[in-house]
Length: 65
Image 1 (cartoon, rainbow, N blue to C red):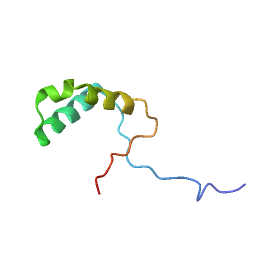
Image 2 (cartoon, helix red, strand yellow):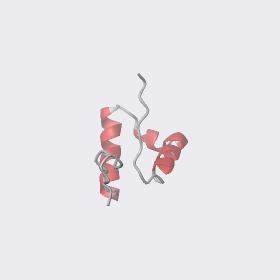
Image 3 (cartoon, one colour):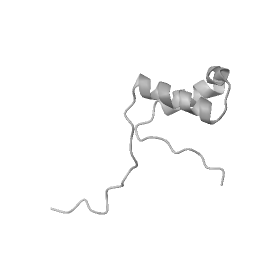
Image 4 (spheres, rainbow, N blue to C red):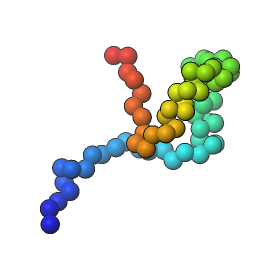
């Protein structure tokens, strides 16, 4: 029987979704990025969250470098 060695890809920590974890992350983002509370009501924020909510493998945040 052959080995799986070399076929497995290590992924980073996948955080299990919960409403409280999402709420905490959202509040942290607002504070740390000095965003107004109404930023959460912007359609583009909602679209970004909606798209990310359907992933099975996590997402990569775009890097500006």
